[in-house]
Length: 226
Image (cartoon, rainbow, N blue to C red; front, side, top):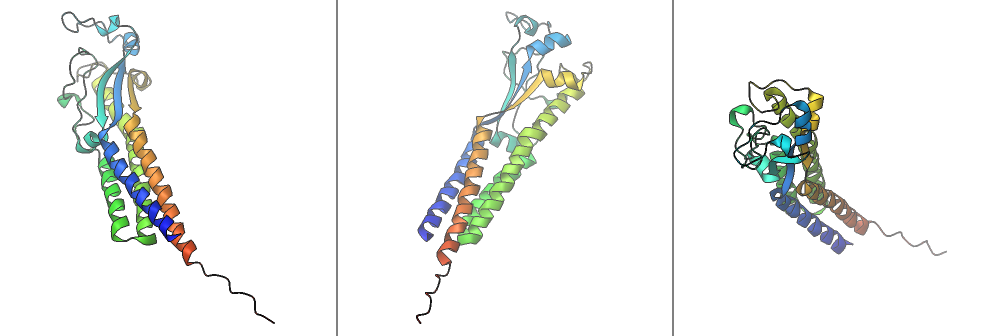
């Protein structure tokens, strides 16, 4: 049983390392619905020579930004203006309110928690190390789920809400319900893989905690011989 517990702990460590590597995969994409822009009247503006205006492209999802976990943690994501030429590379939003211009503290804290959970399994070992792995992985998973599923969509839509559908300070206001149709924030595979790796690490650490206890359980004494 002790050997099985050690194997579970080692696999849990590998899962934590995988979770850290998944930080370099895309976690979030931000896109703009051209169909929604048509309905809002924010299309049909000149978009550059030889490039059709967004209102002439038909309903489509125009990518505005793609962010990896590492980019979110460092605050190095750029986002395009949805009224600009969609074929042009994304530029820093700067004065228009880039919601990604600062490090996301929840994602950054999650990376630190994973590192601490991984180090704890080596420094403490046994049940104590496994417990640190469970707590650290659980808190990290909760932090990134909050960031990607709650905080980031809210920050992105708040940024466009304050700056109008064209992204400029002088743009007309937009209804929050319409904005939800216009700007789409979607979690990507890298995020789900990170959550899955952390969930696997939690389960494996819990299984590793059971192993030593079972091995140390006292053997029932044989009944007395009459």
